[in-house]
Amino acid sequence: MARREFATGLGAAVRRGLRPHSPAAYAFAILCVAAATALRLATDLIAPNAVPFATYFPAVLVASLIGGVSAGALATLLSGLVAWWIFVPPRYDWFPVSTDQIVSLCLFVAASVVIIWIAEQYRIVMRRLDEEEHYRQVIVDELGHRVKNKLATIHTILRHELRGHDKIWDSVSGRLRALSAADDFLVKSDINGVDLRQILEMELQPYGSTRISLQGEPVLLFAKLPAVLALVFHELATNAAKFGSLSSPDGHLAVSWRYGTDRIAVEWTESGGPSVRMPSRRSFGSNLIERSLDGFGGSAKIEFAPAGVICRIAFPRTKAPSAPD
Image (cartoon, rainbow, N blue to C red; front, side, top):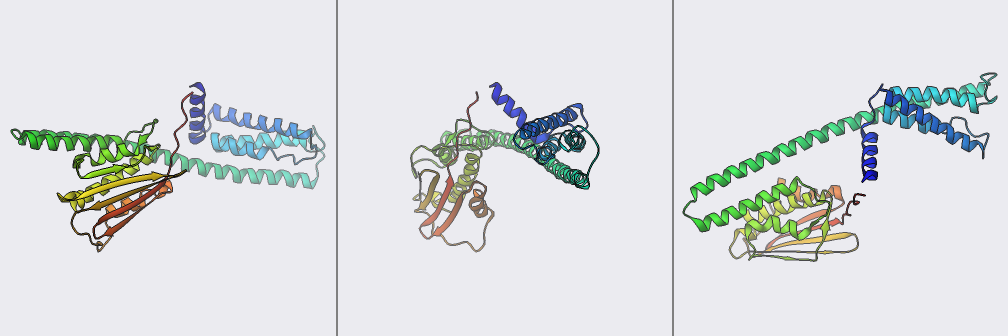
């Protein structure tokens, strides 16, 4: 656990960095220069005439990434002084110097300025990404809260209006619970993985089980892929209930999946519903289905066959996250 916490803290430091102009940032810059000096001294044992400033470029880069512009500038200044004093002939003396040595020092400073500028641009981008991620999480949490409140309100209204109609209420309330469970699933993560069948059952529960068949071996999915697949299956199920096989009493839906070493293939097949025609224009739902898996290296293709919609989905298998120490 301690190792995991250290790794998490280190990752956060790399991503967010230290506060610019802080003592910690300057101390980190000094540490980077010290590490670069130690490495250059070790190199000296093998190649005494190696480039004096070679190990200091990474020191400037790391100091700039973590500590900001001021830390990078301090690392550049210290690196130049230390390398000049120890590794530029005549060693442990400031003079005499040659034109080549002055040019070498100037090139080091110029390259360091470029490195600091690039590192600062990276820090700016990462800060913006962190802000966007925080904003997105706030919005997702707020939307989840609002959806749950709306479902609770709908649940209360329907329960009041359907009093005395127990059979209808049992059917409606079950579907509302299934929709609520699906919404909860989208904002939660499970380090133990989510079975593909569980995702399908969750999305298809509101439509009953007599007209739906699921066939496939257990497949655990991890990270963000289960939530994206839940959105895809939800869109397919909604369209099937509105226009496809689930809109007809005689309709049937079959979902099967198989997997190889590194990829999983899912086939969604509707039959027995209204006759299907190719739509005149692409809908938002179709675009959502076919593009949602692009970021995972997957694909989804919809075929509007006359007997019913067929959707073929393929995506890589995701790996389980490392267990805490």
